[in-house]
Length: 92
Image (cartoon, rainbow, N blue to C red; front, side, top):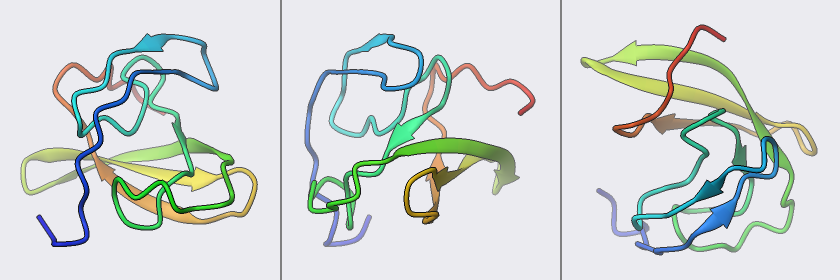
């Protein structure tokens, strides 16, 4: 984990499906629909001004783990995120 990572434990309501999510300090997307929100420049900093919803475009397998590829619907930024235990990974 890089020095730029900041653990932030937050609960949130998914901006896409409305699920109530209990954060664990590493949670950055909805485990139900996999959507995220563009809030960080570096993980946990909440410094991104965009605040757009990030659509899960695809899921890839990398080193034995699922990686979710998100694209912001507002600014177009693409980010990669490791899937979490308990994510409902289904074909996108």
